[in-house]
Figure 1: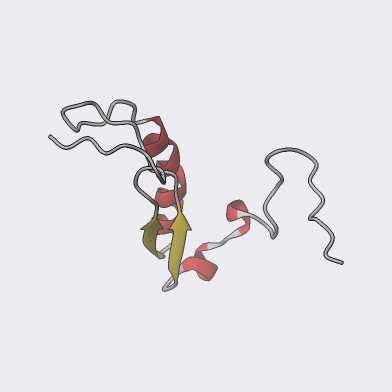
Figure 2: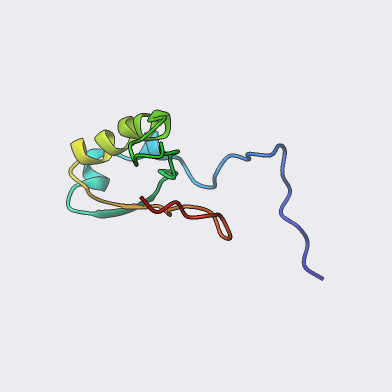
Length: 87
């Protein structure tokens, strides 16, 4: 029988030492695939209505780049089954 992963809250700490523990020596020359939540709300004209999610990821992206890593961002667009607005 598979046991569920124990969770102390809705957002448990990820496994491992975390981003702060990564040194420039570890990052230099590496490629980092970073999953980000850039599914931002748009206005009817297609401009970003709230850039909070974009701005909150900048410190992480900057730390990786300053450490010498190549960064690939992975996100998604929209929600399954959601209506699409064509302009």
